Image 1 (tube, rainbow, N blue to C red):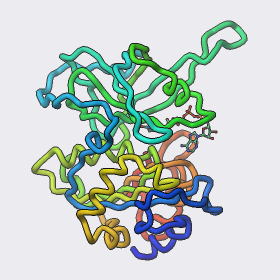
Image 2 (cartoon, rainbow, N blue to C red):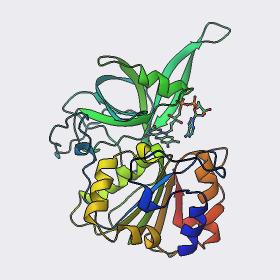
Image 3 (tube, rainbow, N blue to C red):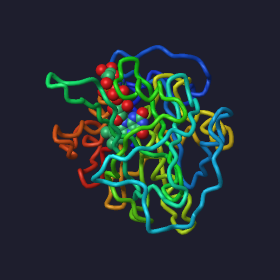
Length: 306
Ligand SMILES: Cc1cc2nc3c(=O)[nH]c(=O)nc-3n(C[C@H](O)[C@H](O)[C@H](O)COP(=O)(O)OP(=O)(O)OC[C@H]3O[C@@H](n4cnc5c(N)ncnc54)[C@H](O)[C@@H]3O)c2cc1C
């Protein structure tokens, strides 16, 4: 496993021990997206990401009661009203959308939803849309709202649309789209490799594991970012680093070794995917497993690309 981190280290100009120093770091030449910060968390961690940033939306207590009705419809675009927006980092925000408080959103872990926004008209005067998937990070069992954490790109069609939204504005949403079905204790050890906003599907799975007291699945998360300032939920990670003296070692040993009891989830920008696992196929199926994970002996059955 140390080979993996040696190789990863080639594209990570700063080691984990530097990741929380709060300075901007130089770019790597090896990667389309430079990775300047990497964090690893292992095993039975508790998660408080909503409480880790002072300017976040205040969450209502989660209503665990489940009901038969869902707010989402996989076949129909539905409108959801933006209730509030909170800043997580210089380019990332959490958007809370509200709906009927008697309903759950209606998705199984791990799933995303699809959003669309009007984008001018085509030659025939027909409305054009930009369509993008996003992964809710709120508890799927909460009623009446869901949260999206979205990174804004300077030229990003949809993320710029989100950046301009004000409370009361509406967004069209369809779904859910199931990615990988998580069932409690389906694997002994799950490794996660995330870059930037690729942390969102990992959060969904982590939350599902941690809220179930009977689920003892071990989770190792490797989280790469452009610079320390880009680490989403940094305060929470800082706290873990401060209270877990062996966290640095875990960064070197954390990922599960290849075995039938192992699942590695990967989500991040194209450059990272290419290097770690190979990108998904053009038809968005899983595609061939290549990259570091393949070299290290993981098989396609052990890896899932979001
Ligand atoms: C299953 C799934 C779930 C997703 N969940 C989330 C989520 O929860 N939160 C979230 O923020 N995003 C998520 N994404 C990514 C999201 O769907 C969009 O791709 C992203 O918001 C960019 O869309 P855009 O229209 O703003 O940019 P585009 O108009 O598509 O791209 C414009 C420019 O932005 C830059 N850019 C766009 N995407 C990236 C990238 N990934 N890395 C580096 N540069 C980029 C490039 O320079 C690009 O040329 C998810 C993607 C998938 C496939």
